[in-house]
Amino acid sequence: MENKEFKSKYTKGQRRVALAAVVLLVLLYLITLVAALTTSPAAPELFRMCIGASLLIPIMLWLYIRFWRFFSKRDRETFQEDKGDEDK
Image (cartoon, rainbow, N blue to C red; front, side, top):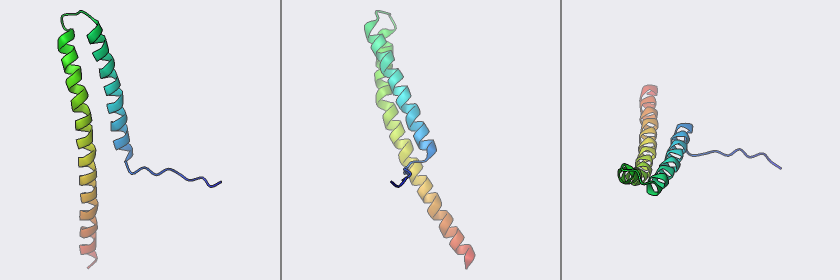
């Protein structure tokens, strides 16, 4: 059987950021659950903040990955064009 190595289209930095976001979201859901179950005076505000963050974090992560791909692709293309101009 051949040993085929998995090649990801995401860089190691992108995967680390995604993992950090997943951990952060899990923690936010746990905090949201605790805030919903407690009768602390700060619980409603904490609950709203966690719900808002659980909406914003995936959106920010998606934007981050999109910009990362766009700028790294553009930088590679620009570098190749500059390198081609030097050879002439």
